[in-house]
Length: 128
Image (cartoon, rainbow, N blue to C red; front, side):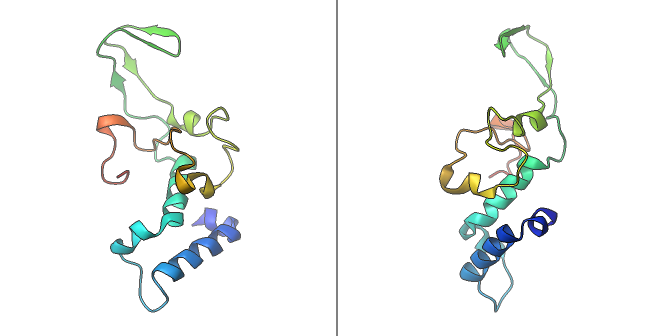
């Protein structure tokens, strides 16, 4: 909410979308959410900027591998600094700015958004 209050133009755009999809005569329901694409962009951008935790759960490498040019032996504990990935200027344009539009129309496709992890063990409830 504070991001929207600090960016009134984004709040107006979200309100216009909600009014167009839901109307003003009833409350928003879970059935409306798939039709609110800009609201989903706001949620994704908020999760990119303000994670629940800065590091993902520890993982252990099953086999010898290379990560970022470093040799990682099997059995090594790996910690992913998702905070740094979400604010990396090599991955995101203006990484510290609140820009929900970066997620519109699949523009952020292939970029690393992983507030709850990635792969088979990511959070299935919130990231579906």
